[in-house]
Length: 159
Image (cartoon, rainbow, N blue to C red; front, side, top):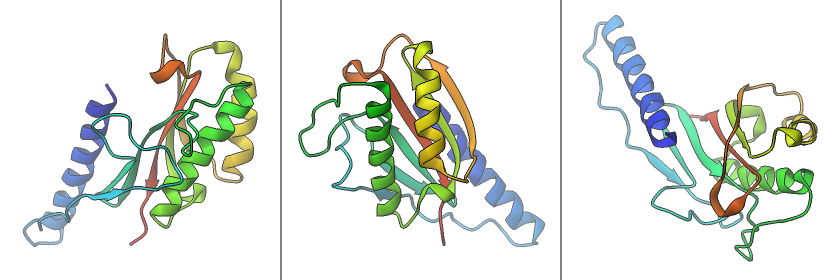
């Protein structure tokens, strides 16, 4: 599902790019190639995907779960601790691309327990600061490694 959503967003960005070129009277240019973003301060991908990709003027960050990048272990404890670790991981990926939470335009939060929403939301509000990106929150039956939370995001990439 997440791959399909990412493909749709990239396709939408490319269509908008092409439409803008036609509106300006020039043929569409070949869009720049995708740029892969990695950070040693975030967990390595646990599958055939990238930590983040920059394409069409946006950074698309893969979902992060509360894994400690140094040990590869899931951070246990409270949902607040797990959410903080997720934000640490996302922040590392954003920084690797020269971005921060102020550049984020969309997030998706996945939770395995509805009861965790309020506590997650407090950490989310603190970490996002004044930025209020669009957000979807989904309650799911399970997440990788038994994680209670996963967050992915889209940020406006700087040129």
